[in-house]
Length: 148
Image (cartoon, rainbow, N blue to C red; front, side, top):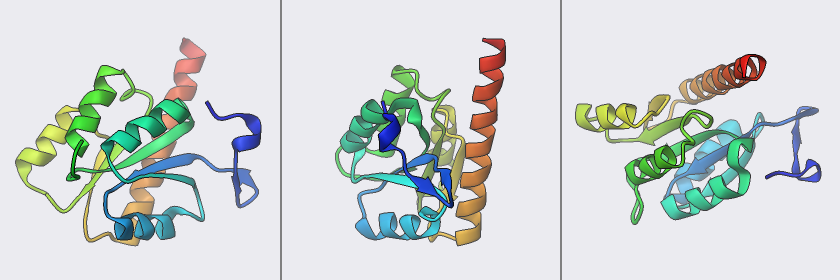
């Protein structure tokens, strides 16, 4: 859980936290550059570190950008663990990968990913998809709060 003093501000407002999970430091740096002016960023270099960050921050994470192909626990295994822990309804995941095969994409969607971003990254595509997904899930959380 994030305590009040742990929050960061970006542009004068409390920034929503995005978790970037990728084994390649360069990919994390590129995404940091694209999103760091708008969001508070956390990073993980592998699936196990991702799960530790999810334990630490829980639903204070507004979005996970998850690499599909990583050594050890890959993105698919992370999705399966998130599903078992019932995190997929509250924490959206966007897969990031160069593997755009129909089988891989289909499997990721079956596991509950919100979207899919291909490498190499296009700044406008990444920013728009991240913003849209974060806004959609924030709206859904608010609606559940009114009806729950």
